[in-house]
Image 1 (cartoon, rainbow, N blue to C red):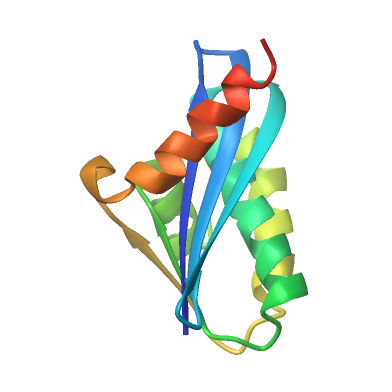
Image 2: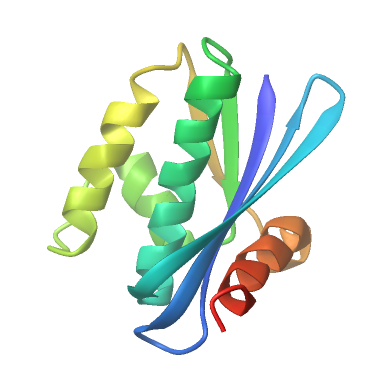
Length: 130
């Protein structure tokens, strides 16, 4: 099983944003930083999950994925596999497709204090765009 930590950040609502992905797998740690376009913080959080799943599919195919996020909105939408939000729905559809590549996928909410590595990477992605 691999542990995946994701975070999205935005320097203001609908500002420059970034995604951070921190993965613990096979005794090693992997860090990824993704500058994103102008998005809300929630959208950046969803994009971080998408990026993480894309990485896992390429680098860790057929692994059990345990994803952790400090975004209650993202965790709830993915866990319930439902949203009425028209902005989040296309992102959920992409995530559904990515999840289907793994034998097992788990998502869990964690407090911000337990997500510092992914947070650091997401903020770094914003600074890369300045």
